[in-house]
Length: 254
Image 1 (cartoon, helix red, strand yellow):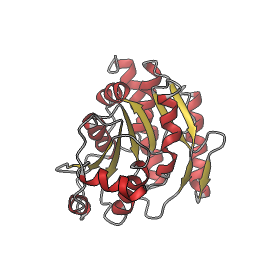
Image 2 (tube, rainbow, N blue to C red; image 1 turned 120 degrees about the vertical axis):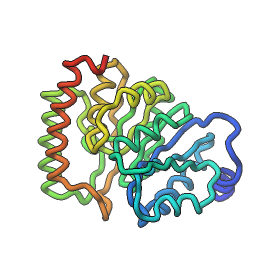
Image 3 (tube, rainbow, N blue to C red; image 1 turned 90 degrees about the vertical axis):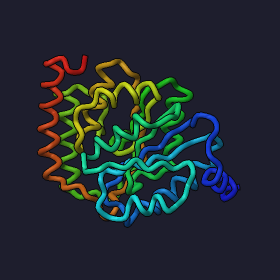
Image 4 (cartoon, rainbow, N blue to C red; image 1 turned 180 degrees about the vertical axis):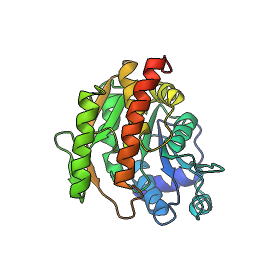
């Protein structure tokens, strides 16, 4: 009864704590946020557990916030920011506001389809992992419409992550990650990077603190309208690698 389940979710406030919180960072996403909310709400409402959706707006200047508010979904919370603070800042606010036993961060473009969520959830629920990372590099992943330049740059960055930072995750940047409530609170409370490379810091901290991490192959497509400037983000990525290394030396992550 797909529509009945969705109808209950959108009109009846949760009484119990959510089993799953889903956090979507959003900056000027008026063109696709409604479609993404619809896809997520339709699928997750059928999974048989209480859940909440949080849109962590990042100071959007378009109609993103207005459109989300107008939906009138009682289990949707829009976290509003007075100004743009970066994707990492939006995710941090969402994760620290989430009430679920498990928390998923997913990109607003739905590049990794929400149907992949159960793959991550089973790792935490059934197999005892603390963090599950959707991966475009793990065996069995499906990656579509990625430019040759992005493929080359991704390969180089993955080599650095593995051989210099010694993080045992091949794809740190896929926007589809799930945590236990305890891991989400600790990792995002310690987070210092608020830009694009925040994922790298979070996974570095997860390894440092001894959390059990699963890398899960997922389907992914480079959705139209991406705001990622590949060359600029590579420069920021390398800068943030140094910052993480420096933070650790200074004892900031203790």
